[in-house]
Image (cartoon, rainbow, N blue to C red; front, top):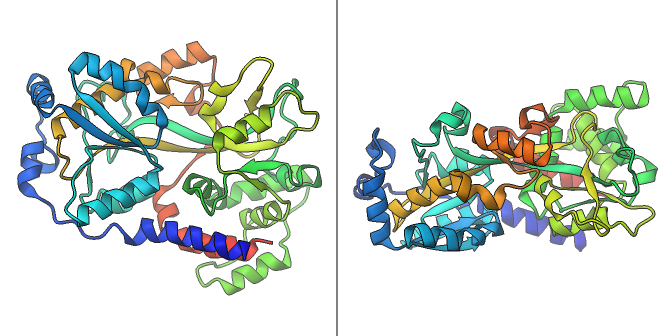
Length: 399
């Protein structure tokens, strides 16, 4: 029954992601008024945009981060415009936007969203959202951070360990260590059947099989061999050609009794609790580093994990199609890309896309540069098109 419940939850979320974003009838009059798409101006008149935004009076945002609430007062003070923010997971934002759009309800202006696979493969091509690049910030961004989506920050799911109990470094040096008996029942993460970013983490491991095979040989001193259950799972799945090292890792990992917890903050605290003698390790959000508290929580990234210590994904800002306050949307997007508007996310582990802001972060937090981290980037297209195959494999390999 428990397995069937998990299947139902994940199947529902996949259904929302893959089938709910139906065809959208583009409204050319709105596009022209909003200045998006083919009507976007090469010369942005920010005096006019700000004046129109003040007339609109408010801006509504669906945000993947609850920290959006920290912008309300500052934005109101500067522009006399109210931010109405809703803290909604990325996949559910897109489902909600699509459902409302089909019903003729247009109430949201901006999406702050980390589901690049759905944004790039559904929402953007179907003109459910629009990319907008404030020209004032373009000089500090790489081309891939502006098009096809404007990236505000680079987020990550990484492996944490308790630095109070292990002051000399992480107690594991390979992702394969998570399959060893010593970590049985002692790895915490959100369930990939309930948390899309956790699913993306596992899918990205699956997409890096050659590196996982090489890491296996470095860890165990021999070539990998495959379990009978993995071989049978591949034979039963028409979308798979042959077993891989990553599939074997997933099988052994799931059979090592990982503990699924819904809250990424609780995972961080459960790992970092300094009163423990035998703490777990955890896969959670990089920016939870801000939750460390002297004498209470002490967690650190396992930077040297072989072949990677986590998975990184972009967090984008886009304008919703038919946004009722398009000028306020542009103003908020520019504000969130600026230093003042980035403050709620100016935390260790949240890397600003803008190079000038990241440079200040490296000094402030004494962290490695984002480009120097051993993190695997998500592949939005691969994740999108292999999602159902991943689901089938995952459920087959579950004990």
